[in-house]
Each structure stands twice: as structure tokens, then as C-alpha cells.
Image 1 (cartoon, rainbow, N blue to C red):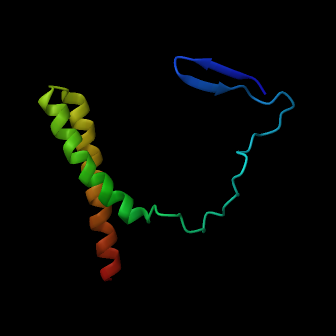
Image 2: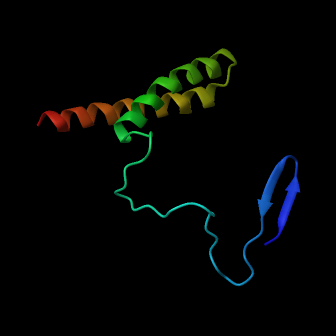
Length: 91
């Protein structure tokens, strides 16, 4: 394995024998395993919706129109996810 260092970042080359690299000391988890401390998709969507509000304000304050628009779309998408999930839970 070859290490490349530049501009404060470390990069690894691919293994030469075609094997896939695995992180040392990590266990493979199944998709059904509970994620430690991450919560579920609803918690992630709520966090994203809240965090993006500040980013939208920052982009608009600095006249970054397209970026502000894209961040606003991300906020709407996260809020829509939460709305549709809560409707499904009620039925």
C-alpha cells in the first residue's frame, strides 16, 4: 500500500492485487444494525431541516443566490420528508 501526502491530506493507493481494502479494527455491520447515536431517518431529516435554515440565511446575506436556492430546496425536502412520515404514522 502506498501513502501519498499533500496539502494536509493523506491518500492511499489501491491495493495492487485487486483486493478491496477494509478498515482495520472495524466490524462489518448489517443494514439492520442500530446505528450508534445517529438516530433514524426522521431524526436526520429534522436535524438537516434545522441546520439548513442558518445556511440559507448565510448564503443570502452574502448574495450567493444559487447556493441559497439549493439549500432552501434541501430544507423543503427535509421538511416534506417529516410531513409525509408523520402522515403515514397517523394512518
